[in-house]
Amino acid sequence: MALSEPAQVFDAGSFAQFALELHDAAGVDETLEAIVQFALQAANCKHAGVALAARGGRAEVGAITDPIVETLYRIQIETEQGPMLTALSGHTVTVPDVATDDRWPRWHIAAASAGIGSALHVPMKISEHTTGVLSLYNAEPNAFTVDDEAIAHILARHASVAVATARHEVSMAQAVDARKLVGQAMGILMERYDMNDDQAFAVLRRYSQDTNTKLRDVAQQLIETRKLPR
Image (tube, rainbow, N blue to C red; front, side, top):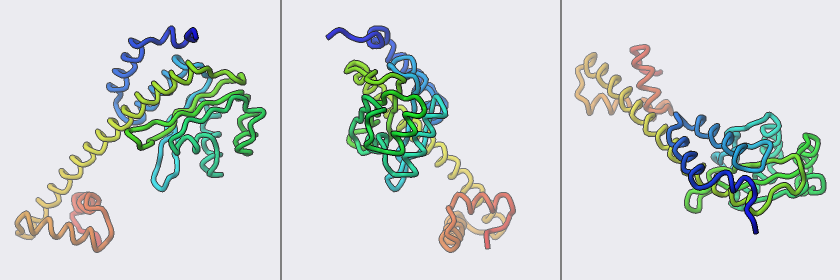
């Protein structure tokens, strides 16, 4: 089978450049934006979006190229049914002809009304863990070929790694920031109450536990007000 035009234009070099751009993205939001914008160029789609797996098995909107994508995501999150949520379970979901596919009634009505002809939802995975879904939409029915689906899977793999890396970097930065705040708060306690570092940390931890407040937030409040929370 001959490759479709997107597969011919976007070769391995293009995807390598895309991976570098994702690596250079400043944070999670910037990474997601780069993913959906590249999808518009590389895949046979009019709109694109990324939904991320959230706690409790729910989903959250990550990035969109058009408000209709967010609308379709929100409908699925509210009704707890739809092709994106099905893909979030780890399986690729294709909707060849939105007009005749009524598996998810509310999504079907909204998508058809918005002029969506076909849709493709590909899970973003790290090992066997699904971290999100890449969604592609075309105005025409039966628009996505086998080659288009292959390109979407390549994008989803790059996206899953990039998002995981960006999230890890954010977590590391937050952890460093938290350690700095706790260190400053300990210094205040040590100076004011003539404590050693073990005693100062124990006080912060006790206040954190007693008030059900994150240690970082207890430290932040102490630094800003020079008082421990009540």
